[in-house]
Image 1: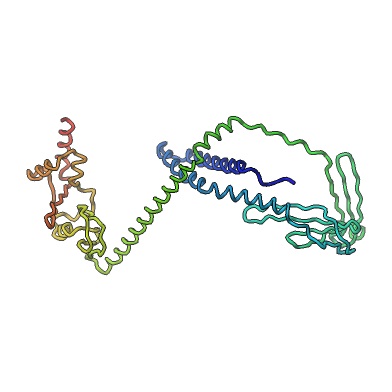
Image 2: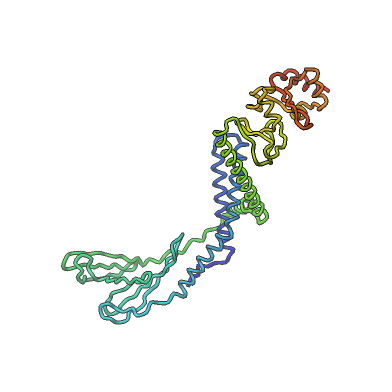
Length: 364
């Protein structure tokens, strides 16, 4: 009996070839997308990273499932007992087992085996499928249910059988081809395609180390998502509270930073309103309008001292000197409890002087 279960290497190769085919499909699809080569490259790397990672993650489970299914099919074919007490419904004599035919269950369908019996005297049969017995009466006319007559003619290449009913005129003809089947052609392995597969397998079939790193990356992304979801939920809850307290309120929990100056915010010593979370110094500056409101609304309109140092290569002492001399326009948010003040440098008002300062640094 032909065994369905094969060596593990067969299933590994089958799975890896499927992985390579899928990855090639993604690459070809992405190449057809309009856009720059760089954007297609980024998209391709991202999609293939997710695809190949998931394929690695499912590899062992899928291969084990395939092997288990084939093993179960072999076990069914070898160990399913032949039904007993199968007797002819016409003469009540034991029927002879003629054949049994296995059906491989794909997907969620279970495997099953059908048994076929025949009575040599009455020329009737019985099919047993899933324990259900079904009579098979080849000589019964499907129209009037009378016994039909039959004749067969055999030639060199076929057997032609004709059944007909003398009562209602029904007839049918079956032809059984005796031509021997042609031997299966041996398909030669395409060496060039095999070489391409081996190369692509190195790219698309992850090693265990690469697979474990993929799992760690997924866990990190899931952790980030949980944090972002928590932040979003808290922000939505605060916006809801603003409906009852439109002027704002202090947050009971700490761990935040002022969205203006970046100062760490302890519990209750902060303020939250429609402009965001602020320290009390920045909140007082907002209330007293010592800093124009537009700078609280849009951070892109101004520089911090750190940005001047980083983008324009200005030393902190130079910045303070330029502010004292009035060459750099700045709005001061006075610090509390001995904390240094925080400067807001408008981009528009300082545009010309910053260009001159930057050019002088480049020349130097």
